[in-house]
Length: 74
Image (cartoon, rainbow, N blue to C red):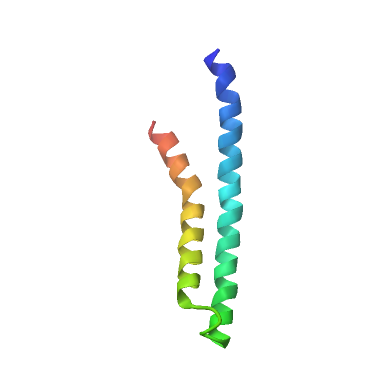
């Protein structure tokens, strides 16, 4: 019975990991675009938004890596 319950959980886990990769890449792209806007007009695009998007993108990209590393250790 436990094996039957683990299959939907693994599908959901794969969905969340793939989603975090896509959103992380989108965050990094948005950080790049905001940085280009900041270079043109620093008042329109504050540096804090660039930094928050960049850190969020890195964290979202590292989340699947951390999950894979914890699976290998366990």
